[in-house]
Length: 246
Image (cartoon, rainbow, N blue to C red; front, side, top):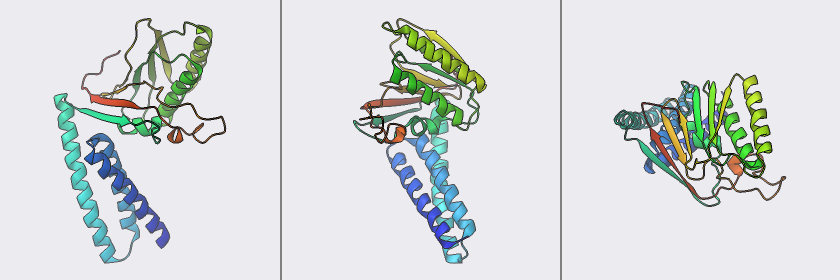
């Protein structure tokens, strides 16, 4: 393997592990654990490629240190989950970027995830419907096998036909992917909550509608939500051993 490829893996590992440490220090343990695991794998790949013993020793020391910390976090997270005390909070600041659905939910999606419940009163207007489509697309691309998505929302009092038509089209499209969309409406719904059947519960203050409107259809961030500016909101993450339908 060329030296520049090894250097590239090392640079990537440093970047991911730096993020892991930042998340660790911020108390965002589940996210930090994912980053530690990714960074460690990059260092392991680099270790296999280098020839110099001194360099190998350096990588082994770094890997051991990060693995020890990752194991400590894993034990802590599992203990909190077992006791039903796990709570993590993410504060998304005004105009922040880097909070696409992929980025926000990645740490809480696992291979055992098969069913998702979404409770959000504002899946009504065009941009909110697009947000929900993006969320469903994220689940389809994620390393899981989601077979059922439940949506509880409120009906658009001004133009319910557009909302009904859009969600019916999405339901058919998801069915083609082997996923069932269970749609229900409530006139009293207020709170927002997303629940995964692997135990994770994510409560976003603004629901899925926390992105700002892009300046134009040809502006950066129109297609890539990681580059889309956000409105200020808070995300609370909990874990329960007993997942119930909303």
